[in-house]
Structures are given as structure tokens and as C-alpha cells.
Image 1: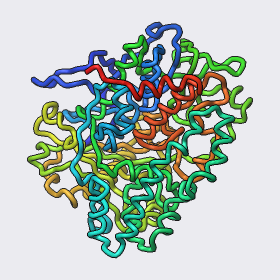
Image 2 (image 1 turned 90 degrees about the horizontal axis):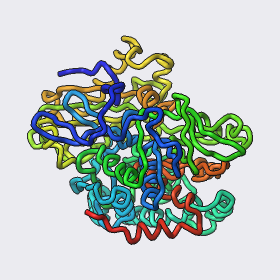
Image 3 (image 1 turned 60 degrees about the vertical axis):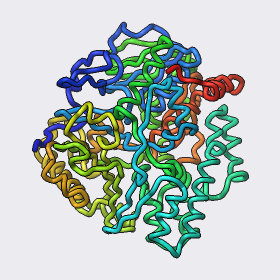
Image 4 (image 1 turned 45 degrees about the horizontal axis):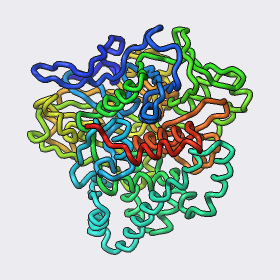
Length: 569
């Protein structure tokens, strides 16, 4: 067994990867997990129609849609590969995703999300449906299964809670109704800023009250069965907030998103960026990596390009930030623009989301040999989600408030061709940067023995949770490494190691500045912070930003593209 001495996401991070899309591993030709071409001064065009800063799914969606509509787009990514939290990395003969654990709806041919992915990838991105039991919620050693399909989902829970069938049915009807009306809730994101303010102020008049309540508030209005509530909220790690703190809107969207089951990209998480980037390049655009933007260029309250870290400048008619709200207003915008619009005050009205620990583990043996399936495990010490979280955040030695376990190699039907006789597992829990404050300011790979010892303690605790539920993996373990909030801070430029952008509390959804259009002319924002957490949220954020950039008079160009697009392959 080999234990990592380095943090993930960093393998050969200073090497210059070739631009080709495949590599040879033994006798197997497999796609590269690194996407994009390395930026150098002079390699980019002097001017583009649009510059997108950040290559997460929101930025890629926005860039690909604009490319489909004839725009020449430049995507600038500071990391060594495109994709943001949809990217993958490879080390020691294994490959892991860093954020794409499973996605709902994309395996349904007629779903909006599948349609949008088909358009931006031009039909290249394919999906593999997971097993019918997509999530298993384990609360204090008792298991509850979330089964794909509305009726199967209801039936599975009714078996565990026979006295609460009416409540379960009412809950499913409620999350489906909230999900179906989400487009009405977020419609203001496609409108001009002033019009969005008016529209959003009227939402309480035509949307049900649950849109404006917390998750716990809504569920306790349905039932006083706390065990049932703890199970229904057993996916709260997918957006990082316990029921007391999260907006029910976020919970309902997430829960309804998976009612039809989960799916995984064929070829692994890197297939997402790998299949979208050609859409941008085919319209004359570029996707650059190692391309750190120092600051936006603004004159007379009009954005006209970016200044790179090497001092070079690239100009464009429009600029889109996909680096998150906090990084946009605190780092990209010039100080003069922040003062002019009072933007510095905005950051005080929202909160950063939770950070995480993620253990990436590799095992000898394929899924069949190890008896692995695709079902995710959500493991909780008890049903007291709030108490468990609060105790852990105060004391890192307390029980983990949740442990999420994913089996990515089992989910990808192409895995065995790329990595025969091997399997991977990812084990995730929430974390707090406060537990790592003593190492703030230290350099990657030079944080000291006490840091490595602390990570090793955490790693062993996470592994023991895995071995409790999958004991056959103990002897098969070959390699593991742990990412901490400092890893996320270093590679994703998230100041507190946050992984979901902004917290999804009620206050977040009431802020008018979290809009696709910023007060600086020709400057826009996209990604999860203009919509909601997750790949689906970022995807829809990219679409909404594109709508705003086109304007009300030309928005039908995009709707027609989505309606009539037919993949060429």
C-alpha cells in the first residue's frame, strides 16, 4: 500500500501537457484527463467577441452556447486543465473525479438538462445510468434506499415508514412542484438588472410559500417524525448545509433532480470538458490553461478585456466571470469599480459555503472482483444533522457529521478498458478552514510533518468508515491521498476552501447583486452563484447568463437552438 505525500489535483502540475486528446497507457489508448492548451503570451488572439474567465461548467456552457451562435470566445483557466470541479486527475495508475460524483436527469433523453448537454457537446457526451438504488442513506447503522423512479422512491420509503405514506407522497409532490416552477423563480436572471429587481420583488405573490422557507421549516410542517426528516434530508451534503440552515428551494431542486436516478459521464468526469471544448474551438475560439487573469480591464465603467498575470492584455466586446461571486468582486474587479458601485459591501451580505475533506483511494481488483456497485453511501452517526455538524465544527475529533462514499470506477462503463483490474473510491466529508488555520500561509508540499500527521489521522478515520461498510476493500487498498480545504484554496482559489460557492440559505436568494449582469457595462457573471450548487446548477447558470447577454430581443436565437438542435453524430 502506498500513501500519498502530496495533495491531489497536483500531479505534475508544472509539466506542459500536449494538446492532443489521447494518451497511451500500456497497450490501451485512452483519453487524456487534461483538457485545453497552455497559455503563452502571443498565443491568444488580440481580440475576441467574448472572454470567459474560468472554465467550470457554467463558463463552458456559456462559451459553448455563444460559440454555437457564431461568437468567437476565449476561455481562460488558471488551473492546468479545463473543467473546474468537473475535471479529473490521474496518479499512480488511477483516475479520480473531483466533483462529478453523479448527475440526475441527463440519462433521460427528453430532459432539459440532457438537451442542453447535447447542444454544448454537439452530441459527443454520453451518459451511463447508475443502478436503481442511487443513494443509500445510513443513519446510526440503519439503511434507507432511494430508488430511481417516483413510485419506486415512494414505495421504498413506505416500507420503512408505513405510518407515514401520506406524508411521503405529499413530500414527493411538493419537491416536484417546486422543481417544476424553478424557471419562474429564476426568470429574473435572464432580465435586465432593473427589471429583475421588480420581478423578484413580486415572486412571493405567485410562488408558493415553501420557496421562501428553510428546509427544516417546510418538513416540520409536513411531519413531526424526526427520523423521517433526517432520511429525507440525507443528501444535504450535495449542497453543504443542514436542514436548519438551507433554503428549501435548494433542497427541493436537489431531491427532485435525482428522483429518476443518477448517471455518470462515459469516459469519466473529464469527458465533460473534453466534449465541450471542441464546440468552442470549432467557432474560432480558444480554451487556455495556466492562464491566470490578474484583473479585468475597465474604462468609463465599461469592461473591455483582461490583464493576464504575465502583464499581457486580451480584449473583448464582452467579459464573463465564472470564478465565483467572491473572487469576482474581491479580486477581478478594479478597486475603482468596487468603490463606484459600493460592491465591497456586497460580500458582507452572503456567506461562503462549506469546505470539504476528500480521500481518493485506489484498490487492486475491478468492481466485479471486489463486489462493488454504483450506489452512493451517505453515512451519518445519528439523525441529528444540525447537532452533528455543530459538534464537529467545534471539535475536529468529534464524529464526522456525514461521510459520503462514491465508487466512480464502477459508474463508468469504459473504466475497465482504461484501468483494468483496478477500482477507485472517493470518501468525502465537510470540513472547516478553522481546523487548518495553523497552516495558513504555508506552501504546498512544505506544510510540515504536523500537517501530514493531521491529514493521516483524518484519512484513517475516513477509511475506517469505508471498511465498516465495504470490509472486502481493506486488503485490496493500494493507494490513497487526502485533499483538505488548503488544497481547494490552492488550486481553486477559494479563500476558505469552499466547494459550493456561496451558502444556499434564504438570505442568499434575496440578494439582487447575485445577478448574471454586473453594474459594469459589458460584464457578466455565470456559474453556480447565479443559480444553485452542483453541475446542474452551474449548467443552468451558464444558460441564463447567455440569455442575458443576448438580450430580450435576441433571446429566441438561443431558445430556437435548444429546441431545434440535432447532433451531427
